[in-house]
Length: 537
Image (cartoon, rainbow, N blue to C red; front, side, top):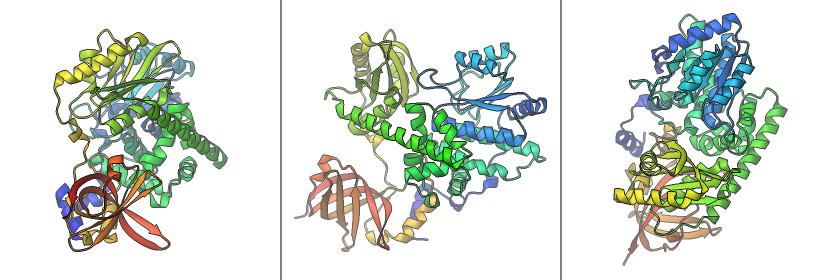
């Protein structure tokens, strides 16, 4: 083990068990509240031949949760299982009243929610009034447990057990419980084939990859690498992902966005059909369609960012345009990245109302801001500190913009940009320690994500070379005091970085990447931050 990697493990407080987690260390799913009741009700539905409807969500977590539970129920022996996913543009998020009629029309006697349902008490009561039972499986906050539900399986119901799991992680816990019920109290191992879906939903929902999620994502990467699902194989093909060399970046930035593009641009049913496809021809066609939708999403998002003009004096960006409703959250997020300010992106609906998404960071809570400043201005709105959704009358746009900025300024917040800066794991003064062996050791920490970020190195030394690539990127060569050089690349470098010149001292933050070219392997750096320290005299 290299000295730098040993130091990194000590810095993060990681043990060998983190590097090589044991699948058997997963907690007993029956420790989750109401799991026994959930399994008992599903068993009755199976034995009585009842129809079961799985009700999910339109994002990657909801799609993977729905497909996973469908497979688990069929393996358990339930023969009549259907899935309903809401439409972002018609139904909105979560289990809703219009869905009650559809569920009743299908003749279901049991509804199982995945990745939603914790705040749907009224809907669950209405289902109960129509003779339809509900099991909730979810991971969102649960201020009031829906009393009409047969079971509410949510790790946030007190204690620390699995609190950081995604919706797909909770669905997998139910799948394990069903498998145990079939096999005398122990899983037979077949449930592991569901882990390809678990790792996608967990990473795409930005869950903290520690404890339970570390185990699920670690083994999920292995299963996804040899997935049996034709749809995921075809999706990897169009995304240019080699499943044999899989990493978290490929899931979070290649596979996940294409699954999410379905719900953002058209219908999440397309992504669900892809994941569950049984023929290669269908999988091929759906993967191509999702790839096209993702391209449309990217173009629409880039065009929106280009046309937005941000006033210098605004502490909170509130932008309005004719944008696709499904990409508003992405636009707001990109505005935060570019301008380092909280942001809202709003678009006009057909009925003249404005609908939008907000993104924030640091000490400016969107939930608190909406509560303090949204009264009388919003038709609806809600969320949490870092993200929210709003709907308002068009005539209230300017007033809403002023209210958000007034709210921010009244808080007298200082130096909020520090919350956007990545912390360095290690400072390296001797570049000879950056090696292929170190890179391979760092790969043992995969998958990277929340709570287990890609290691960030910091270097303070001489910039000995610079080249601008395609007017967008920046190639740098740095040298330590012992004369050792290292190449780094800054993709889509800010203009101020491009002004740096050879002969200056710089402070850099970077992550490592392997460059393979014509059978030559080199370890390079991807620049995260650059600070000019002045020329060497």
